[in-house]
Image 1 (cartoon, rainbow, N blue to C red):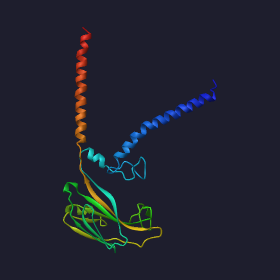
Image 2 (image 1 turned 135 degrees about the vertical axis):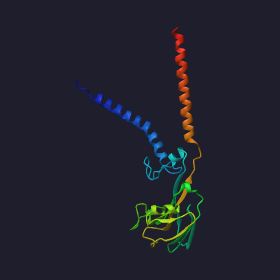
Image 3 (image 1 turned 180 degrees about the vertical axis):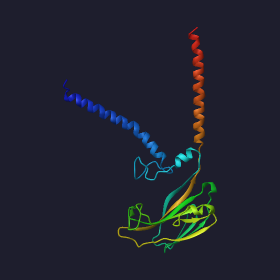
Image 4 (image 1 turned 60 degrees about the horizontal axis):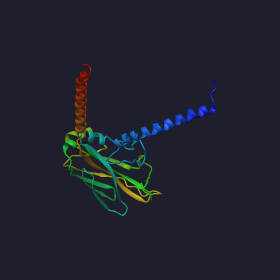
Length: 235
């Protein structure tokens, strides 16, 4: 039997409609899953639509009623500034125009949330705020990236020599290389990680388990009364 062109057109049309329907059904689910792996309250990822550019397990940890230790990327402008003072969650940090920096540990977080991490780096921005990638910088535009860790003294040997380690009562010093402003850049910035500990606000896991218990008990009672009630129709 020879099929007409209109038949094939209808088949193609039906498949297109089915694929469109499938997309509108699956996309919201994928979007919700994507949000669950994003940091903080990020609903829209400026880099990727569905795949998080910086995936984390923060929301999953909070849903399971566990604390989550994270870090927010922040920056400070360095142009025309001799000294920059900030608190990165590990303690009070002082950065000088020549690249010297010092950190006096003074964290409000408890030992159960250790280790607490941060970082320092130099980056250059253009007029619209985009990073200028210079030679020696990583793909994030960070030049002379230095990692800082606050942890207990007995864990010091777990970290490599290129990590700046401090204890909750300690202090450390370091040196960042600050190149001159490259072509196309208008701002020199100090990039750093602001450490934080997210604490569960809602007992999500308890709510889930209570829902499972209520559903199980309700289902059992429905089955019990339905089964016993069925004998009335058999008498």
